[in-house]
Each structure stands twice: as structure tokens, then as C-alpha cells.
Length: 278
Ligand SMILES: [Zn+2]
Image (cartoon, rainbow, N blue to C red; front, side):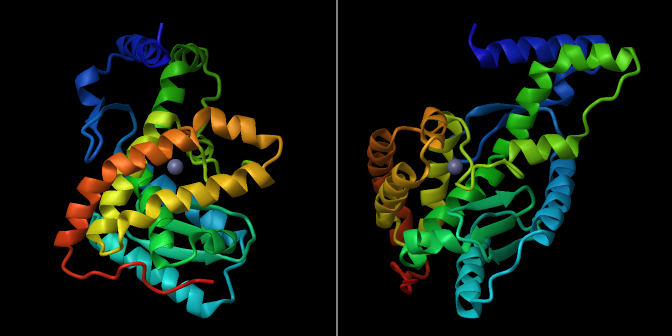
């Protein structure tokens, strides 16, 4: 059975046992692609957990001392946030002093960029590719979806544990896992292939609407893939098994370019590739 289907069936079993109707939970659609999603966690709760996890993560990481670069991160982030249609998010953009090629956006618009990814970005538009992609994961609630799948897969067991009065793992920990915080990756968190393609699609549209030329997106991912192959060593296989293949990703992105270009053409302010970062 396909894993999604199995998880849904387990979830229905879970809610049957606990007496909560499926109509109260689960069935959402992702922005832009309108893909149907199973999400069991109220968004408000996901946002609160995101804010808390961000405080805890950022508290353990030194902020960048590179003020001009931090300002660029803030500027690009604000432009993307300005077109994300989530005024309820409390957006924050932090540049972390670390050579990791990493970036993430937690629910509620908490964005962290690591200095190590800036040379891969090359310019503001390249930074917009990665920021818009990470923001897209949050907008489409991919972490919440992943948490829900874990909860669903584990649902019957958890209910049994609950009935037996055992400890139920807390949601904070699930969120940290769902967003890859505290893992050894040190690279952009791999979601599943469908979520990655969806974040690429939503991301290029977002950056285009924010006024950055989306034409740089395939090149950014090609450069990132090159580094990934060189530097990840043993992690490469694991990474590649969840990410779309580079070839397929580049092809899919090219197929999205017409739509993204037409959005860019209509953007009220055009920044092109913006300032160079290196
Ligand atoms: Zn991603």
C-alpha cells in the first residue's frame, strides 16, 4: 500500500478510537498547486511551536557580525514576506555566523540563513531563490504535514500508550524533527520529493512577485547540487534519496519559468538579480 494511504487509514483509525471526526482535522490544500494535504495540527499551534523552536535554535547560534550582509538578508526577506499574503506571520530574518550551507523557515515566518550559503547564492536573486523556497515550505505547511504523517503513522500505537497512561511525545520535539533542527545535516533540510517540487514551484512564483528575476533559480540549484556532491560525502545518498534528482529538478524548474516570468513581468518593482554578494 502506498505510505500516504496507509497513514491516512491509520489516522482514521486513530480518530475513530478517540471519537474526533475527520471533518475537524486533516483535509487542506497547499497554496499554488492546490495539492490535497493531511494536516492534523492546528496552524496556530504550529506557529507557536515554530516561534519557540526559533528562539531556542537562534539562542544557540551566533548572529553574523557582517552587518551589510545581514541587511541584505533582511531586505530580501521583507520583499518575499511582502508578497506572501501572510500578514498574521511575525516575520523574522536572521543571518547566522556559520559556514554551513543551510537555511530554514519555521512556521510563522521565522527565517534563518547561514553565512555559508551566501557564496552559493552569488547575488540577491540567488538569495531570494533559497529564501523563497524555504518560505514556501512554511506557507505550504510541509513541516506540519510531515508531523501529521508521523503522528498518523504512530497514531494507533500512541492511542494505545495513552490508554495505558504512558508518556506521549511532545509536539515541540516532533516539530524539531519535522524541520530537521538538531540533526546532523548542515544542509537544506530534505523534505520528500513532492514537497520539494512544490516548494520550488511556490518559491519561484514568490521571488518573481517580489521583483527578483526567477531565471537564476535553475542555476542556483545546479551550483548547490555541485557543492552537495563535493562536500556531503556519506550523506549524499540519503540526501539524494529524498530530493528530486538535480536533472529532474532543473527540468521541472525550466517548465515553471514561463509562469514565473509572466509573474515577474507584472511585478510592480523589478530588482533583476540585485546586488552581488561575493
Ligand atoms: Zn526544500
